[in-house]
Length: 166
Image 1 (cartoon, rainbow, N blue to C red):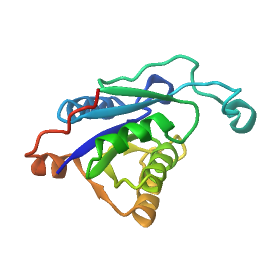
Image 2: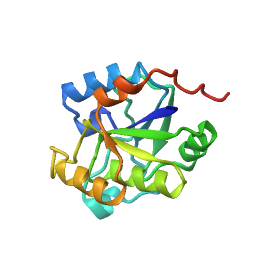
Image 3: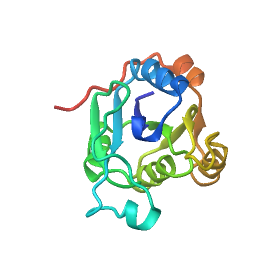
Image 4: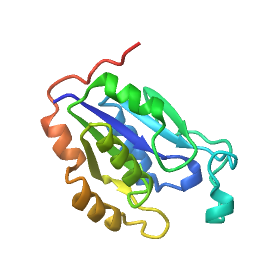
């Protein structure tokens, strides 16, 4: 199965636990990987004005990725969606931080783009409100249906990852 990994916001700003960072690092070494990195730009997304907090203005992913896309809010950048459409995977594996926020927003954007988002539940945590991610996982199943685990992906991955377009 042609699949691509999308890692959402595994960066210092969101204080991911070490087990998540280690798991994402190991998993991303086996797949073509895209990552998002949320940076603050109040002129683009009013985090401070509306939410009373904001991500860092400068940060970096805590893992390797073939491509990193900067975003300034919850959704996926248009460039990331264009890149994923060009890759044409059978599914986009989604993991990282914000199962009840950023991951869900990414899932909806992927769905709306005609792609098949699949949440990797054992590499996903929620926001600070529900760090377990259970609320986000339940919403994902209700709205987007497809979930998996690292073990299930690795057990079924006999094909090489799709090549990245130049």
